[in-house]
Length: 334
Image (cartoon, rainbow, N blue to C red; front, side, top):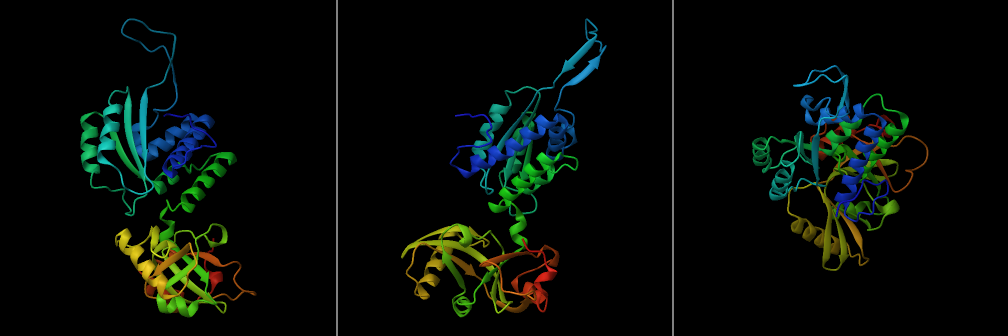
């Protein structure tokens, strides 16, 4: 069932919510100035889409049988958007969209918006989709959420749209739709659990929202005594729902979902905790470092995030070496 774009959608599925947010920001850009939307679409789809959005005002253009004094026109175009929170696009769904699109008039575009692990938006079925689209005179483009966000960050937007774009960026980030997680260190207070974390290579906390929720991050740091003493790669985060039930929250590892859930259950049972539901961070090898908090007082809250993008880190061992002897004040936290 189709619906108009709404500021407060009632969609229960996250994909539909995300699509609504993306369409809403495009609608806001268009309502502010059609040229804004035209520039965004040109950035996403190429210069051949430039100038398509918005009416044209022409005077004294000769037609086949007449010369009207004035003319106001809008070239037709149609863009279909298929959104996935990952990159699990369905070939037959996309081919079905092409069949519907080819009935439209003017320029036609099928846009696949997804969360791609690679720097380039790739899916094994995309070459076939692109070939089919070309046969029907349709443009096909695969776009990541990062590319979408970059396209709408126009340099001369009014403050209300700057704020709206910023809010959408935060939504993308909080829902792990941006690659910023690859450059994030999640430092967690392990003052009372350090030995267990080190021995069992897991960190556990209640599977609740609020202070226990963690943004997706690639690296984990153990904090105690005003210092991060170990760092590790977070291989996956799994919620343990009962003695033998587990569900994957997210993973940074190529191993299959059921294998990671099994590892989480096995390591969780070794620490002797019987509370449920619990969230388990499966950690790789923990490497020693001294990443020091020199300001007064302890860490505020149970966790703190650091942007390590400028360090050009290869892996957790490399991160440990590059943080050795450095202070928190040298790095951006968020």
